[in-house]
Image 1: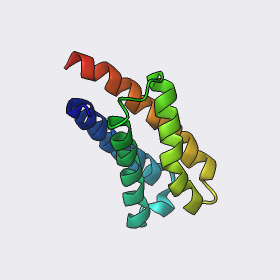
Image 2: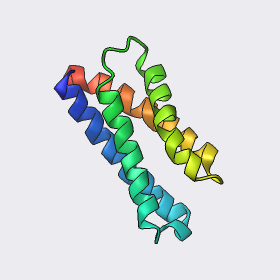
Image 3: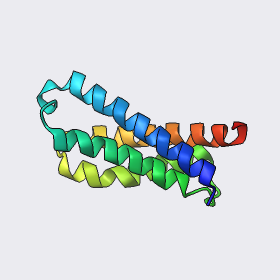
Image 4: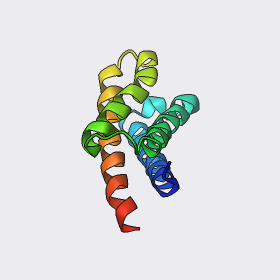
Length: 110
């Protein structure tokens, strides 16, 4: 396991989670009081980052690898949000691609 890749991906996952939480609070004010749901959003995106950080031995293009990991990790959260299932999976895919592509570029530059 590449420790530098793990740290970069985890930090990017946490940042994406905080951004996603802020977007959820401003777009859907009814969720602003649901601290458990908002914490789950940050946890989910951070977990995507952790999984991407440890998946450096999977020989796929970073966009494909990130998309698969993002969707698989987000499935657990999507099951419990029936109305927003496609949104959760869609954003999991987008954040997975974003985290993996950025991590792959940054680990070679830093």
